[in-house]
Amino acid sequence: MKEILISVFTLGILGTLFGILLGVFNEKFKVEENPLVQAIYEVLPHGECGACGFPGCHPCAEAIAEGRAGYDACVVGGKEVEQKIKDIMEKAQSS
Image (cartoon, rainbow, N blue to C red):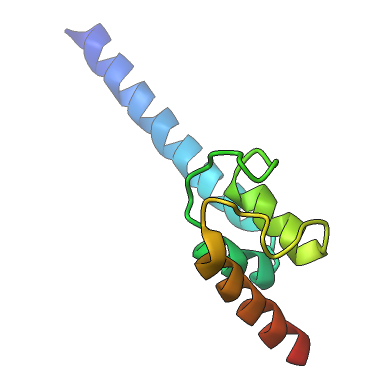
């Protein structure tokens, strides 16, 4: 019984320590993301289908924001998503 208690206590301490370290490192090494990419990503359908030629919606949003892909890159979203992306890009360019 004593061995079990020592094991549980040790794992509890280690789990707490690693949790604290992960929290600290998460804040220290945080990567700031382009808000334009996030805005474009929000209007995409999040199907992660790859029909646009990118491995998912986030890489597609990055490509649109950087000008490597057109506003109509998301074929699944259609004209509605294309218009929303145009509006976001026009708003960003006028700012």
